[in-house]
Image (cartoon, rainbow, N blue to C red; front, side, top):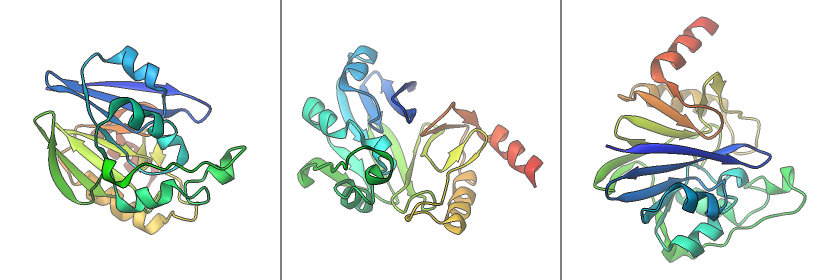
Length: 203
């Protein structure tokens, strides 16, 4: 059984999750300093999972790489986007350009597949729409959905890598999965039932 701790810091209030069981911990996204992670868990960090490569979700990824020396899971498109300030949106939203240069041999490229961490099967699914590099991770009946879905709506699609048609297709695929709870890239977690009820009321 896993436990989930949500950490949040910074102007953009992006969520970073520490997922633990008796075998260790994994981190999902990189929006808080290393010190916050170390204050949250004393268990070894086994992996870092990135939902997408917009700057607010990878802000401290280089520091994580240096501190934890563990594999980083992301899509190949996300890896290419990290080093491009235009594509990772730092040029648009920050006072200076940022480029994250992580050695390729530190990265595990994933798309639509299942792998194992903490002796738990983790299914990942590409979910383009908010970003063309977005991935959802499904672990023990919950979904870490990045900026695809939120408590009161869906992710924005007005960036260059966004597409509203693809987002709705991705949402449909995700809602077909046997998920109990969603953990988004911003804001509080929410149940699948609450999200479906919210959508039905807006139709």
